[in-house]
Image (cartoon, rainbow, N blue to C red; front, side):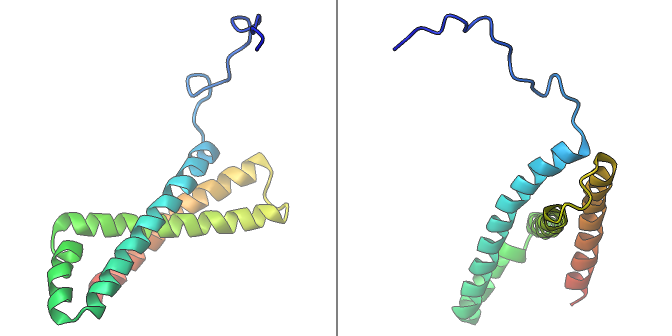
Length: 132
């Protein structure tokens, strides 16, 4: 084991204190968060399906937890947004895999398009689900 004689002289890695957050940085972080959020959402859907398979009494008891209070609607709204955001982010990455839209200006526009598209998709989906 050797001592690192240059430990105090090495430059530090840039951090959020140096870089100003921009849409591509935030989008990258949100893609990871929404991937995990989508997993949680799918577990909730699985819970709902298992309750439905358990019969009317089981379904009624579990539906109170899944849909019976205002916070549940906020959670479902977040899950729907996470699905939309993650899907649109995946489409953007497929576009980038074809080496299209890699210029900074175009990439930033795609980032904002994902934000706007996910919000619009979430609102439309939520309205449709509330009507049905």
